[in-house]
Length: 133
Image 1 (cartoon, rainbow, N blue to C red):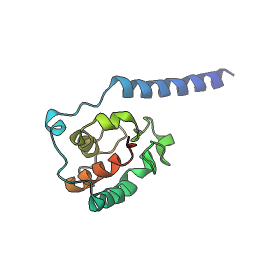
Image 2: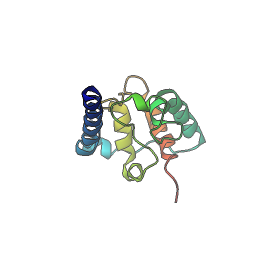
Image 3: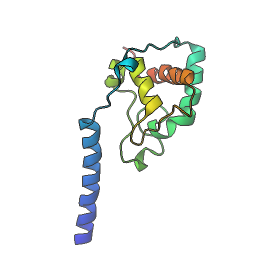
Image 4: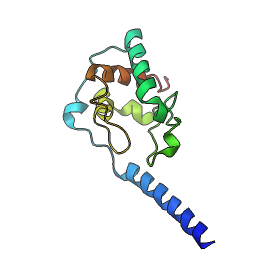
């Protein structure tokens, strides 16, 4: 009984720390990236490229439709971002670009895996997850 209680408390503490870290450790994006504008229009070609890279590099954590429910999401210490939420709509393209490029914690840095040009296409594709009004 004591072992089970200790185990459950451990799980609770790890989950709490993970959530605390996300809420109380906001992702600071340098000004130079916040000011960057996406050089690519979100046209059919860009979205197709972005979708391809998303399927290869992002879908396992963020899920098919960007809700943070990918196959490996349950194995992570930090929940992947739900890319369908309002906060994505308030972020500038340069902010999203920076987060993909640099990463943090369990979010991989893709600066050596995806060309910078293609990261912009991923940003365009991710924008399609946000519901239009």
